[in-house]
Image 1 (cartoon, one colour):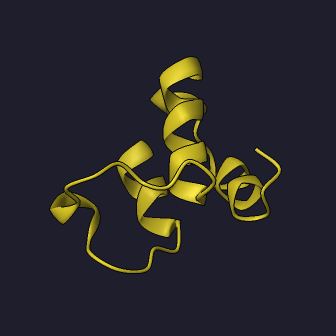
Image 2 (spheres, one colour):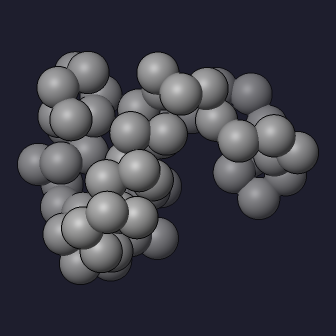
Length: 57
């Protein structure tokens, strides 16, 4: 689930697999990754992705 959901997070710059450094802490991707680490990959839903984009996750 997380692989599909993470693809929906709008990213700028290099592709996720090419990153040498972690995403900026205030980015949607960083918020989703932190949420997944705490709650598990199955808890990442499309709604959570939208909340991350809005800065509300």
